[in-house]
Picture 1: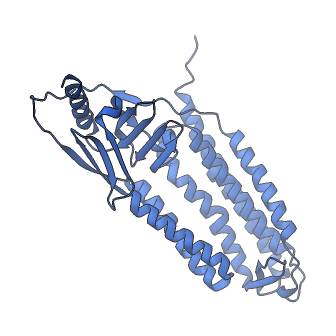
Picture 2: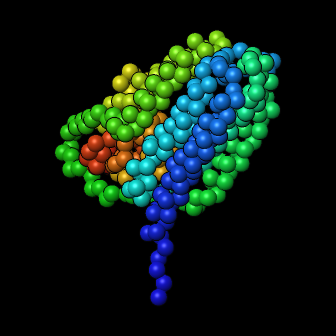
Picture 3: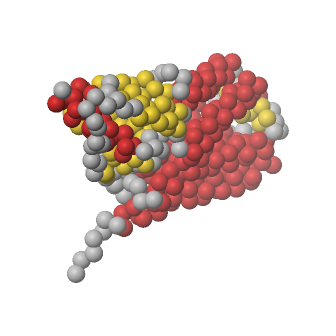
Length: 337
């Protein structure tokens, strides 16, 4: 007698993800902090924490700052990444995105723990942190080790392919001849996704603010511009208005852009499908995959429209089944007119 291993795969994927994205960063961070605490008595105070393009130390802070940064960056960032996908993993979702984020979390932890620890090690025995040597070689080594760590994290997780979309059977609505019907709903991003995006924007804003004080203006400017771009993107993707009428399907963000319109005549098929954003689209918001575009705001039912040429458009929205039933009825009536 054999047992179908399929039900075990999501559990195995979750366990391996936690091992790679949570347990290993915790171990690496604890080890790095232990080494740094041993080095502290041998370090100048303050220590160098920033170097210019020529390799000269030009930013300084108390020695304990490096320990704090190691914990925040070497452990905090991986845990933040893990937190964004733990819930869908626990629901049994699998796919490329989860495996990739696990590998990235481990790579980030390796990069920051190695970089911060090595940058302190090269300063041991110095009387003045201004004499600290260039860390270009340290940075290169840290990047190489981080890539190797990410690759190891990738292969430590099981291969998992996202399942096909679940289609909910839907019967067309009964429309009287000449009857005009409009269906409208507002769809907003899931609370968990919104929180994750806001945290990312706030973290970048905080990093930009810190950079203006302790880093060069170019880095601070890049971080500030990135924060503003992400904030604008969030405003354009957090809320959408969805409308179905005899013109077809229209989806527009609360600020007016982006906007998607699909006339009835361009539709070859309409279905109500169950969408899992992380597993099927790699995240929330406006997502684009080969042959498929989605306004993916939460886990749940969605309108899926197949256009001439085979390309699909998907939008998650409350009461998607009614919208699909109306679209099917409108398409049938258009064919008979």
